[in-house]
Image (cartoon, rainbow, N blue to C red; front, side):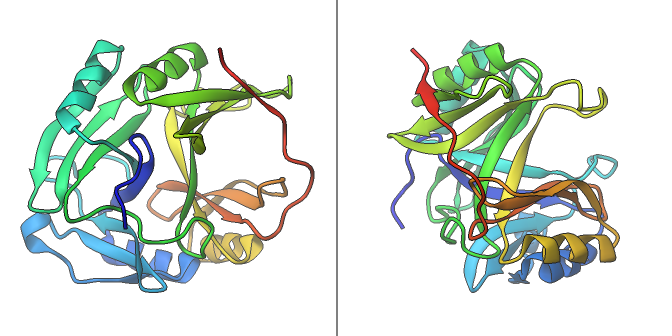
Length: 267
C-alpha cells in the first residue's frame, strides 16, 4: 500500500478501561477480529475487518485511567515535526510531542483551535488502514464537529495541503477538505441542537452492511443511539456510543437517498 497524501485520515484507535469488553462489543457490532496484544507497546491490540487492519484498541496510559474513552483519528504526515510546528504556528496545541513507535512510525497528538483532538502519523512499517473505503467494518469517513468554523477552516488548510469546498445548501454550514483533489475530511458546525457540554470532536464513521442492524446490536449490548438512523445521498447512517462512552458513527454506503449536494470551492 502506497503512502497516503498528507492530511489523509490513515488510522484510528481508542483507549478503553475494559479492553476485553470493547473487543467483544466491536466484534459484535462491526464484525472485527483482533490480533495479539503487544505488551511492549502498552498492550496495543489491532482490529481487523475481513483480515485487513481496521483500527486498534488499548488500555489507558498510566495516569490516564480516568480519561473518557474516545476514538482518535490520525492524519498522514510526511514529517511529524514539521506538521507539529505548523500546528503551533496556526493556533493549535500540541498534546503529545512527536514520538517514535518502534519501527511502525512516528506519532503526535494535537488539538485544533476549536478544541477537537486529532492524531498525526508519519508511517514507517505501519502505513495505516488496509480496508477499502465503504467495505464492512472498515473506516469510511470523518468529520470535524466544531463551534468555530472560521478558525478551524483556517487552521486545517494551513497545517495540511488541503483545498476546501463548502456546501451550497444555506441551511447547513458544512465544508469538505480535499487532498490532491479527493475529499478526505468533513467539517460540520455544531449548532444550538448540540448540548453545550458536548465538546468539539472528530466523528469517525465505520462502514456496515446494515445500519439498522448495527444500531440494534449497539443498544442490545448497552450502547446508545445518539442520532439516526437517517438516509442521505452518501448512505444510511447513525451516530452511536459504545458501552464505555466512545462515540462513533456507522454508515451503509449501499443504501442512499436523495441527490448529492452542490459544493463550491473556497477562494
